[in-house]
Length: 494
Length: 129
Figure: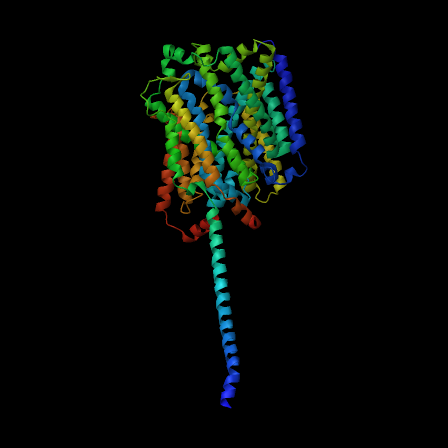
């Protein structure tokens, strides 16, 4: 979108101000910072509307809109997997959310580590779990910060230098988070989610009008790129199944996802939100998948680097047709920025809660008041965001993989939830050993460049080993009747 | 004299008898009532307990979810094949889309029918802390 940058700047600033006003009006309250629950979980909790939108906007990031069409361009129809793998997250939730929601309400949990502490009462697990989650989250945030810069460059056609753009949006996010806590984030997420949906659907309709829809796409692909339309080979299919586990379990145990289970004001709100979420992949990743398929015929012969720009190319082609198109594409870009912000703000809030509740409150100052913890969390959140920003601008030449690990690492905390919630014999030392083994295997495989073995992701292999160690170790361990009884009492939901 | 006495005492005796039976019946019935009511309330309590539904405990839904999920992946079609084309999409993808829709419907069904634990939160909300 060359030559139109200043309009993008105006839109960006207006949108950011709009978000700030929205959050201030709806969620900024006196005394918010006096309680962890009020600040990090929205007090009495979020109703079905806000909960659904914050789940939705947090789950779908800018990468869904920008990266998925590019991936579809490269691999073709087999990237349809991006629709079911988002549904798998709901399956992941069903494995543990019903019981965790009840226990969280009973025992006033604020962070995922609260559960680890309550269930295992073993410092090494709480520390390791917190570190793994904070590490995975930081990398996820880093990815979002890089994406914000790219989206701003797209929206303003370079009028705002990449770094200023990121700093501007990061400051906006930090302000509204500090003002409104979880409720503020949810309100901003709802706004961003709605803009994202409008942008994506507008993009789909205009792509159909501009590029002639899917008509003839199949014939074109059969003649020119049959590998993109044919049934993928077995290795790809195994990889497809493996990603169901990686994303389904990994995304459900993301700390910000778990916090939304805690933040639901009632089970009914949580159920309603998850039911709607089961349909959202069709309206988000499904839509961008179709756009990606259309792009194969519209922009033939792009290499990998060029294909990454496919959304920008399509948006430019659409915007140049008419003024209405142009403004609709502006909405799309705003939606992309919104999608990234809504993911980033939730991650920042989750990170901040981990740092204040689990690091500060548990290990640095055990006697800290709630007010002190919230304050510390806000400051630590700002601190970590700026460290990540420096990293985003000066990416290390070597050991780049350290900053790529997300799901692979987060997944290793899953057994402590998925098994720990149901089996009273799950023993703490086995859980710790499993967590360490899983994390080491998953990260080693990534470092040596073997992201998958026979199509199965390193993180999933690590998880399998992790689970075996947990189960076998617990079976072999000397049973402690007294401890099992107290865990039984904790887990008793009848 | 004796006769008169017997005659006069008869109704008295029978009244006492009836009174005795009444007391006995009352005691038995009230005990029984207490027992029945208690049992009933126990049953109700049990019923209440039964109403707590947790998806993880309904074993059959998990293999069903696994099967539907596996059907979203085109294992059953020959590698590289794309015919027939249905509405601009290869058939294998149409099957995959249908399986995904079935999965979303099934998950909605599971949430509706097999997840109900709200009362546990309400019951215990007093115990918090």
